[in-house]
Length: 319
Image (cartoon, rainbow, N blue to C red; front, side, top):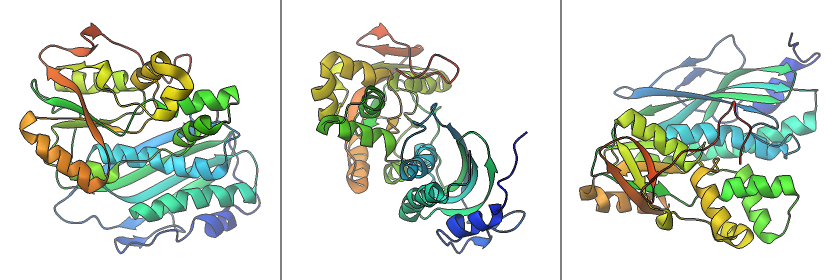
């Protein structure tokens, strides 16, 4: 049975998690049995949740600041994929012991990213046990994107570049700490959610998903939900220079296809929207690359060959 941190659970909550970001739509936040919140009119409420487990989703010896950032970033990425504006967070934090230095750094990493996107922490729970972070995030969307809108003839696009985060995990596990490895590790520990791009793609993209389990796996979700096929061209996949230099072309391609943890956006749009896609990317300050097309049929093909693979939470672990 999980026991609460004693003594001082409520003091810890008040000290590190109260009043991080204030919003006018929060009538009552941290400190009561529940939050009282007022969604804006004429929007859809979008809710996402992720659980991060030490040594499953992040290294147990990662800096607490990075864990705080990452916990929020992966949820923000889900909202970005649905063109939703972030608003409120509920945090359930399980820690092995009362470590105020760790909590302070975790809260700092969380708060820095929350302040960038106006996310108010409105409640949660703190318990003792194996290090685990569960975050529920709510946001609003006027025109939410879905995985199910891709249509044959649409282009397939991706933001940023692919494979660097998986390369960072490999570097961390191998103990590499040279310049390129340091950059890859940073990309793994500090993913950058594409919230501005997701919002700019509302009404432009036909479908979207964030890339958490690997390009091929997540493209497969779009294909399945849309009842279509996605045909990708490996030569067009954007890959980070640090990844190419450290691992070489073959390994870099494999991680770009199946590595996971990129938290970039994969999205589709009709060719008639090419200029709108480029304009949205420019407004968001994010590079985007066309990497293939939506086709009739099913599944994902890479260079015209059937493709599978990616992270499975109940499999043997990440590549």
